Image 1 (cartoon, rainbow, N blue to C red):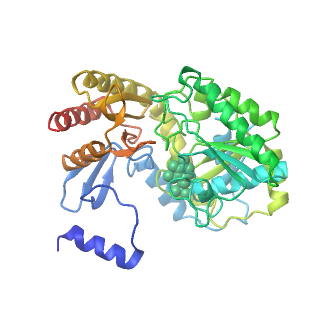
Image 2: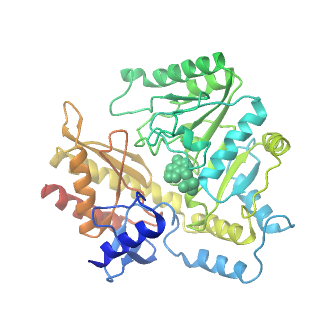
Amino acid sequence: MSDNAALIARRERLLGRNMSLFYDDPVHLVRGEGVWLWDADGRRYLDCYNNVPHVGHCHPRVVEAITRQASTLNTHTRYLHEGILDYVERLTATFDSSLDAAILTCTGSEANDVALRMAQAVTGRTGVIATNHTYHGNTAAVSQLSTRMPPVGGFGGHVRHVPAPDSYRPLGGEAFAAAFAAAVEAAIASLQESPHGFSALIIDPFFANEGFPDLPRGFLDKAVAAVRKAGGLVITDEVQPGFGRTGSDMWGHQRAGIVPDIVTLGKPMANGHPVGGVVANADVLNAFRKAFRYFNTFGGNPVSCAAAMAVLDVIEDEKLVENARDVGEYTRDAFKSLAQKHTIIGDVRGSGLFMGMEFVADRATKEPAVAEASRIVNEMRERGVLMGKIGIHQCATKIRPPMPFSRENADLMLSVFDDVLSGL
Ligand code: PMP
């Protein structure tokens, strides 16, 4: 049995079957640094996928902050500690002034779970609207929203799904912002007629899991207005586009031009140390705490806050949002040039260091090239470049490297990509 086969068998025995694992030949990673990863055989990979090590794998400043705080004090969150206050002050300063307080959690799932309950506390209702290709996490409440793994017994009566926006195959043609808003309005009306009532719309403002469609600024305005008119709350899930990833703004909702009521955070927040968060107005937070008496043992502990603070420092000092904008635009332009040569590329899109393209069998019919997308991602892996696959049709690449990704790194990825497509 190969080393990998033995590890997979051991995983299945100890951790259970059907765990998600990337690539036909999974990678066994042992070390990371910046945008690079190494496997157990010493082979180096260019990481074009991981958004969790946001400021780069094992960034020395984050490692130092964790080490320093872990060797000073780490405890649960029922004591006074300035670390969480300094961090929340610094974090909320990057938001609209109405979003001025936060609860820290350990995962994005928990953050979304809290956000749903915040909306319940404020509205006194439970009905939720999400898109039909989303993922917001793994708690019992938020897994109710995921259409990829429908819950046992079906969706609860309080959940409504609206079609995810798709800029390549737009619902309602050019008027698809209006079509999206109309779907949200219909879902609101349906919930209002139910015993659950309408509480909140939860969306990723960049629609990352839906394949990050190219949406014009203002796309969400009508849908947000419909939510507000019905007395509901808007929750934006920034687990993927947050912390400057899109190269234009610190937050996906800022890029979309909306101010939500609640914002949830996760993955990149502490560069791999498990930290998530919920940002909202203090009144919303207080309504939630009054209704639910929330306590989180680990959320916002001193070590987590030190790690999260170091991430904000590095983003600022290394000008990583600006880098995401520059390298992102450079790479997308290069992908567009490659699209002139390779007809399998149907659509190139994204923003900052969050991008990809859809592969199609035929540009006229836009028939998704699902098997080819899989093959391309696997061949890139064979050649030492890690990327992912996503989208409504599972035929889009997902390229979302650590934020210090350089033009030189992009050139390497592009040349391997060109080679792989030429060899199809
Ligand atoms: N929201 C979104 C948009 C996500 O993509 C994910 C994870 N993929 C989550 C929430 C859940 O985050 P976590 O895995 O940290 O619970």
